[in-house]
Image (cartoon, rainbow, N blue to C red; front, side, top):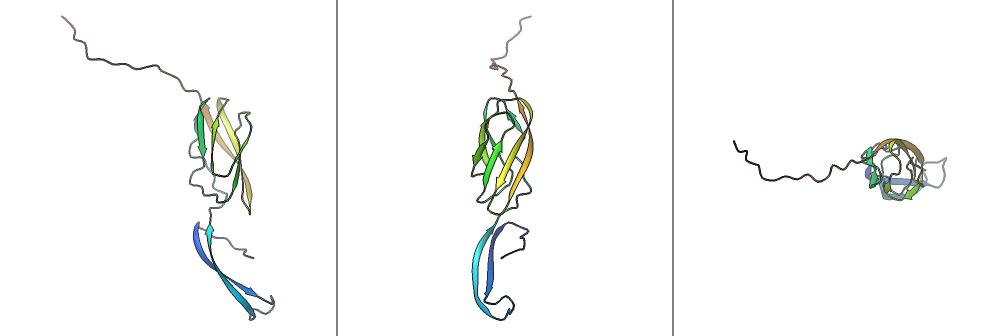
Length: 140
């Protein structure tokens, strides 16, 4: 049973010593050596972007996040159904304008967290086609 905490993510080579008797540390049965992949803890969760376009299919993606083998439950705050993914991103079309809060629940084997992520959904304004032509000469 490992009760410690790794401070940085990455691959680590670890050794576990297994003892027959917990009272006598001198009776070591065997050592097990393994590589483990330490992932970022589930505490620094931010979206890559916080502005999205109304009625347009957009990708919401977590910034610099390696959740490993996690489940992500995205509640978009616009009245649409929540979506579950196995990756730290999701595609969504927002159906409400304004300042919204995305509720994101992340579950791994060892922990579960819920974060409220503020976003803004705006309406794109079409300006029409911009045209240009050669300069006109002006007659005196």
